[in-house]
Length: 213
Image (cartoon, one colour):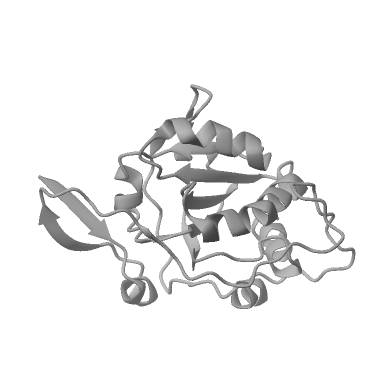
């Protein structure tokens, strides 16, 4: 019997607890695309290309979190470890990146809001990948074969993991796409984003800079 564990926003605000929602032998419903925000590429940025961080930017994590409209749990708790296969035959294990900031994004190729934010994610990754920053996109596509062509088409270079049975997504309580978790260097969930964000704006760069110091 399959147990679905749902992360409720109210629970996150109250203390980041996992809430047991229900038990069912029926297949889990696929997450639905979250409402699309206005996420546009900077006019001077090449699609998929790195966006240099502006000089003199003030690094303030709390201001960055508010600017990006992220959910900040009152009680920070460790996130669950997981191991998932990758399209290239390797595996991604979250605990292997302890000591680094991890940007954990759940998405699918059929999710338009996911596609909308990916160019900005790619630029954020390229701008900070050498400073203790890890980004991983967890695909929830039921057919893993559709993922490699998508990666090639969109010129994504950050790691992609495959969760076709939605086991990790269910554990993390993902019910809408895209959903992103910000994990600090101690392996604790620092913030949560439901829906797309402009991940290459000043606030996003400040967030990464602040959490990788």
